[in-house]
Image (cartoon, rainbow over all chains, first blue to last red):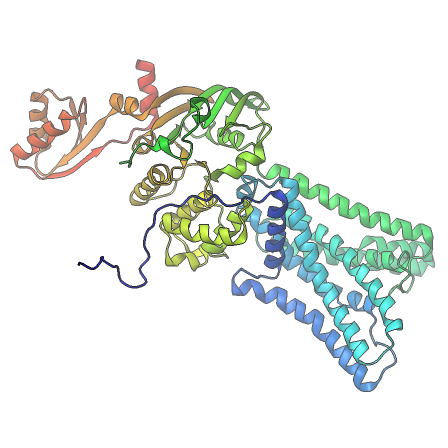
Length: 296
Length: 319
């Protein structure tokens, strides 16, 4: 009996086109998939090796000093952390700004620059859902960047046998601040990046905007302090995202401000919260508007 | 060319009404004072349909309306039996779209990208990976699919773009100028793939081009629009019957061949070394072959001519 003819071992046999009759997931699942892809993309996962360098370098710059502070605290037996949770975020704001600047374009500009956006919009996802997924992905990435080092600080403090009761409230306030900061910076970063799809330009634009805001804030504050108006100096914090968050943490959450002239009083606290909400809503609206034009 | 009737694809078992994949009724689209589409009524059936028109004729606008992305100013349209005005997301789940322009990020591999696009069409993660491997193989991308797309040739990029339009196994794909930017060999490959998509995969295709000649080789029907109006809607056979011209090039003196063909009652005119022969029926090819053989010339080329849109328009005016 003749042997059936066999191809060489490991050959790929063309079995023809197969139709797909499995499940097709709805918009909610697609949005979740896009969120995960965005979050991974911000850290360069699934992209080229070169795209991983910057985000992980910055993450290391954020986390390693926190680990060092923890070790030092334990080694010398300090009774409190040399750098508090909220102050830590404030001290590293430039690193955070650079991260927003370098990674917000990775999250959003490339879809515009390489014109991938039409491929998304020719699929079931709506523009709103696209923006939701991108925004959530960027905000989550930023939250990880800010929350991870303060969590490392807490672990360091607890290993140094500082009392939990002293540490936890400050830590939780700082985490709340990290969440607000992540949502704020993600909005600002994505809007600026979506307006500047060209490579390099987006990075410079985002970092520029954040640093300029920070500079104006410091100048206005210094002038107000010079004039002796504590109220005015307090309101100066509204001008930059990091100090805006500081105000939100300080007044409603009852934390310690890192400012010499901190925002005080219920009114000022309410103003800080309102401005934070307004900025986020404004960024959201700008993004939706931007994408309405992207493929009309 | 095609293996079996393409109309017996995924739409079998439906009534004639439902078999029309795309229907438009008095479709009009205005952007301010510019009219992109004017009272367009179409009924597109299964198989490959060519949508031909000069740049700016309204082809891309029509595709965007069919995807439910741009609301029409007036008139109605349906795709796969779904109204574009109310069922956009459902249509986009079942339709594939390949844009005319570049749309591939350079810093991911084709596999990574197409898997992501499959997920964006609603496929679960495992299915997305399996379908991606299958589809990229079908469009002719093998080992290179693991490389970053930044280093791809235009031909490879077009294959990935086609792949991402097919990965979710749509009932219909809309291909916007898929042969743009390709060299002649790449063009032939792409046209072959388009034919394969319809004939072997059973996925109906609407393909746009500003070149009629290349579409008539693969299309079952041709729709010609100009200035947003329907100029002509016909099966390919009737278009080519009227316009078939074959370019013949021989070694040696073309004049001798020309004389012989004219004597045989075939309309010929010379253009440099090329002879353009009007084909009235299949027998004309035999006449050309025999004439060349009798003269003992080597036959270098015998190729169906590509007609520019302008030729068709001139013809319309004569008719």
